[in-house]
Structure formats: C-alpha cells, structure tokens
View 1 (cartoon, chains in turn green, red):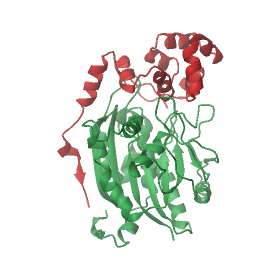
View 2 (tube, rainbow over the protein chains, first blue to last red):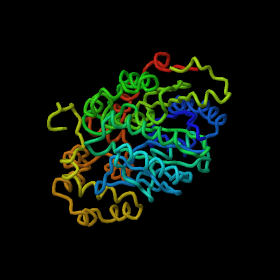
View 3 (cartoon, helix red, strand yellow):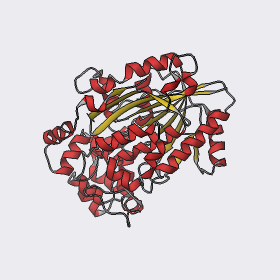
View 4 (cartoon, one colour):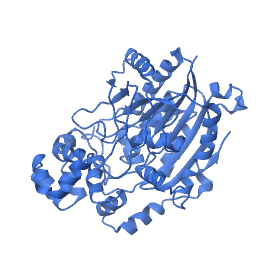
Length: 294
Length: 125
C-alpha cells in the first residue's frame, strides 16, 4: 500500500539555482534561505520517498502561448530540463513514474478535471531547483516524479478552489494506488512577488503569513480570494501560490507542520520553505506525537 | 475577468487580449530558449525581428529596450525575461527600469521589505 508521507513547499526563484551552481549557499544574502534545508533533508533521509508528485508552473520552457493547458500532467518515464534562456545550467531530472501518472490522470478525469496529458514534457526550474534543494548534488534526486503543471501565466487562471479540488482528487488517486511506494508531494513557487509593471518589487508579508498559517490546518481559507484578489495581494507572480494550494490538497485532510522558513528577499521574491508531515508518516514509528496534528 | 474587476495599480494582467496582442513578441522571446537563436538575434537584430513579424510598437519597444512598452505591446514577463537575459539583465535591472529608479535603489527597496526573523520564523513539531 502506497503511503503519502508529507508535503514540501518551496519558492523556485531561478536565482536560487544560480546560487547553487556558484556555490553561494553560505553567502550572507543566501544563507537564511539555504538554512531552511538541512532539517528538511534530515526528514527526507528518515522517510526516503520513492516518488515525488510535483505541482509547479511552467515559465515558457515547455508550454508556449500556442497551446496553454490549464492543468497538464506529465505521463512519461523520462523528463528533461534544458536551457531556459538566461544562463542557468540545466539540472538533472529524475525518471518519471508513468504508471502512477496515468492512474492520476484516470482519477482526475473521473472527477471531471479534463487535463492535458504529456508524454513529452520539458520541466523547468520550478521543478528542477526544488528537487535539487531537497537532494543536492550533481545527480538527479533518487526518486521518480509525476509533474503536474498549473497555468499561472496566462489569465484566466484556475481558481484557488479548483486547484485545491484538483489536489484532493490526486489524493484520492494516491490513496487508491496499489503500489507500495512512499510518496512525497511538492508544491513550488511564490510567495508574494511581482516582476512586471510599475508595481515591480511588490511583496506582502501579511498575505504570505495568512497563507502559511492556514495552508496546513485550513487550506480552504486560501480559496476565499479570487485570482484577481490574489494578484492584488500576492503580486502578479505571487499567484504561484496556486501550486501550493493544489499540493496541499493532495496531502489529505490532516497534516502537521514540521518546519517553516520565510525570508525577504530572494531576488524580487518573498521566499518560503515549509514541510508538512502526514499522519501516515508520523505513525510509521518516527516518534512524532499524534497530538501535533490539527 | 479583467474587464469587470477593478484595476490593480502598476499591474498588467496577461489575459487573452494581451496574449493575442503580444503573440509575435512572445514567440520571438520563446525562441531565445535556444542558444543559436540568441546568437542570431545578437548578430542581426533587425533580421531576427523580421522573422517573427513583430508589430511596429513591439519593434520600437525592443529597439529601446523598454520593458513597460513591451508589456503594453502584449509582452509577458516570463518570455521577456529571456530577452533580458541576452543582455545579461536580471529581474532587478528590469524592475528598476519599470519603476523608474536605479538598480541600487530597487535592490535596496527589496531589502527594506525584510522583516524581523523572530516575527515570522517558527519551528514546529
């Protein structure tokens, strides 16, 4: 029986990849962000997930405006990251888990999410950097992945409510999956930031805190804002919180927050890293208190 | 959505209208994922623009390296970032230009939004 052990949420700013590739993790500018990771890696080392279900958004590597799916599910055994145009070297990408991808696709369509399936899909920095943060080094992370891309580029974007429901349908698929894999869910992007327009540089710690405080115990609270309101609150690119909301949905009803880091700024972004554990992981003899669960 | 919702100051939603208006410019920027195309652009910018059938407004915006004008012409920042990358410009350079300030001042504005760690960081479990 497969087991979903938890959720790992992180910003995916390209500059983080640059800092990794320069070895700048301990520079004063970068240290507060990279300090988030040792405890996360320790937890990953204890639980050793086999599979990562990755909710992220493409930034114009795989998808162009000629065809822009609202929800796209990778359904392949191989994915790659290539040159994205601004100098970051590609990161190695783990193998895919096509069989699990198709089980997720079956469940999503059954639940009336009419997703796009991709047997060929380039995955960009929004997936590659978080994987390398979690499993640093020159080799691909020792997992197989199911990438799920959400359109956060071209409006209209899917609502937060819809993204949470998508994640919850993925949770159903994972619960019904007959394999014995240990599964980690990841959601990447955000938090508040805006790259474009006269409001470039906008961040909003108050809204970010609202998101971080509610994501675990009450993710539905994040669905009360329209996408337009989210743009106003989080910035034009801060709407990447939609990836976090979908990923939270895939974790099931009850999670315990294990770690949280919030740091301003990384590039133009309010950066955050959060780790949640499910009751399944806590119940696996890892010494966590059941009382920690909301 | 954008036609009925109240505008957000200094913010340009990339909606269907923008996506249609900006298609050629964004298509050119998308091509910059490939190094050979970046090099071709640098070798002969005018010829490269011709290949993508840019509008006059888009051509002017690119010629002037004017990001707000590119956005007004339908450019999307994720694609425009690939153009900026050709010139070695970061999102702070692009942010400074759009907000009419120096790069130093823009970076300081970002740093000034930092808040006391004790108020935001918490360890749980």
